[in-house]
Length: 355
Ligand code: SAM
Ligand code: SF4
Image (tube, rainbow, N blue to C red; front, side, top):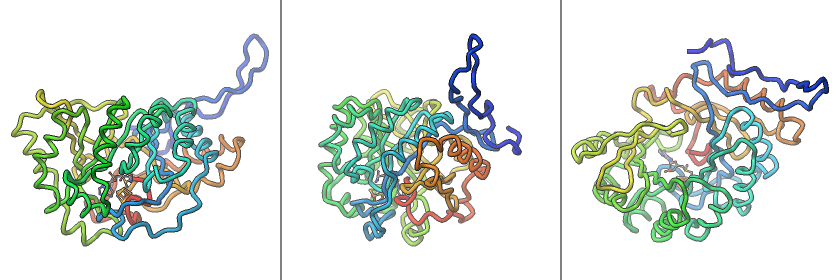
């Protein structure tokens, strides 16, 4: 474990003017690796680009979007933000929201992010309402991976959970992402007691032929969903039991993998994963930081407050100051969330912070 008094440990920070053959050379930015007091390294940025959403998922925005749909980071601000993170060792960026694809300039944002030096991998999390129409363009814009939310495998149940009728479009979007040749297509399925737990066999069957990873996510408590959580939260044991019983095998985690434990089976092209935020040790491998759609740096999905980076996104010349600010903020990251103690932070719903 690292010395806790050493925020952002790693190679030293300042850009050092180099001398080659006796001539001063322009200062080259040196990559510092973001690291917190607990030795966790952060190479992954989850960037919300809007908090607007066109769905009404019961656990997230049951009454639809209620905010003021303006004031989101502009492309130049996003470009500067991502450049600063990339010089701090971030090489994977996920675009999220709200629903990131409701932004009219979504493709331009995606291109700008992927063109940032140092960004090697870009992903998006989407409800897929328009993925079928844009999967190929997305791939051409440099998108490597797509995560799609899918909580039911029939149109009626899908509509009951999301408030949206476009089940068939979402399924078409999944298949379009596969056809476009994305490196990874993943499904996020929130486990909901009495709503989709009877569909486990169908979800397993869904990945028999499709080379996708379907991850069950335990419902998380947020500020707004207390009653819903009390009624619908279901632990992952049902999924684990089924995986064990049917001979699925856990696979090793890659360096930029999320918190899902994934399983494979010889008779299935796809994988099944489980994301269990209430399980002990969930935060030990945390490798991501979040920035909200208005430029707030959040150290944890279930933390309190955010550090406003926006004043440092106005001009390219602010980059070093911006980097210093991020490094300093990281000092405040806690060892874990405290969901198990009933402390879910000040996140009203995940659309507000970028889930
Ligand atoms: N709108 C996009 C979507 O739904 O994929 C991106 C944003 S959404 C907040 C990101 C992910 O968070 C989705 O997979 C969603 O199912 C999940 N999510 C939202 N609220 C949640 C909660 N309370 N517990 C667990 N997962 C949640
Ligand atoms: Fe929208 Fe995603 Fe929240 Fe559903 S989970 S309401 S699609 S932001």
